[in-house]
Length: 98
Image (cartoon, rainbow, N blue to C red; front, top):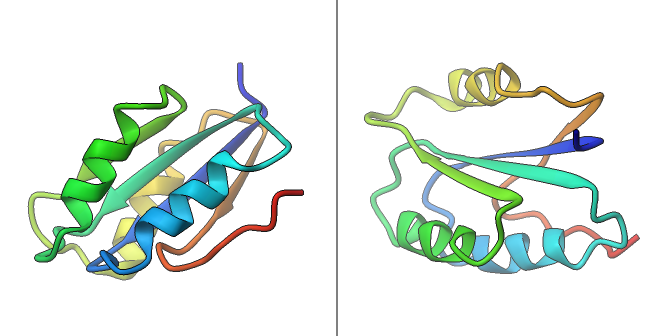
């Protein structure tokens, strides 16, 4: 079982999401899973995320059928956690490698 779940609620972040996802993969901690919940973006966020997760089995991409609001999207993600630790990370944030 993985140690950490990184939760990324996102909406219309096509300008930033790829850099965000790359910063997650660059972590020195490799014992994680990352779940992205797209709040039904109308830009290229979905395509970027869908393409990215195909290359790394630690990543999962979920697109909501309709926009459920920021709070409910984050709550949805929180219910997916099965690891000891979790963190919420925005679709426009960048993590330092350590």
